[in-house]
Image (cartoon, rainbow, N blue to C red; front, side, top):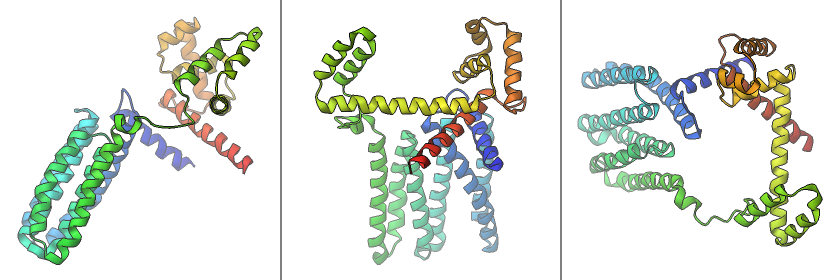
Length: 337
């Protein structure tokens, strides 16, 4: 468990470092891809050096050395935040893509049709890079890959035997279709247009729900009258969504109580404001307390939660809240089962 927490904490630190201002779902996917692709390159590069050395292929050895230096420079630029992370991950994709394209051309030049497997493997990985880039909404990078793949595939197929060519074309077409599929998948106007989702509240149901929320206790007759105007399906939809919201709120409340079990009400308020991203001065103004008082309470919070002084309070609270939320939800599901 400790190893898992340390790994998660390291991932969050890297994520906050690479995306200091904001990190959404797409940004997190990019960070994960950046880490995995970098690790893959670190493993593959020494293997390539060894392979080129054994085969006495000094052209390939020099090419691999150039790629290694370029990768090291890119890692320095990205980790030092000399470029925006979106640009950094795009450059990493481009660097790997160019390496695979050049490697394919070298294989065809020196080995001819005897090394079709290596070439087709490279093209397959290039398609994966294009699809992954598109899934992370790197549209320009993907477009460049799709265009660059055309001559690479054409040259590769021209060096391929007819019997192998018939099988290869199918894989190539699937690759281009997958790029198109992910592009359409990310194109929100097409995906969300005229969707029929019975679990989502329609506009009239939302209006009815807002009107119900604004009614006073003594206006129960008006509530009954308002609901009677809706169809049975609409009434059930409102009730289902309200029940789902209550369940979510209850789970969050239980999780928050677990995280802040040993804290005072004042300390809980401070934690809530820290999670909202409020700065020290903002917390002082809202709670009408001095900076020294809030700083002292933050120290007490760290001590009660067994946190180190170097730990980021907001990040640590987020991590503990989501872990508690997961545990509460798992516990509820186990009881039902």
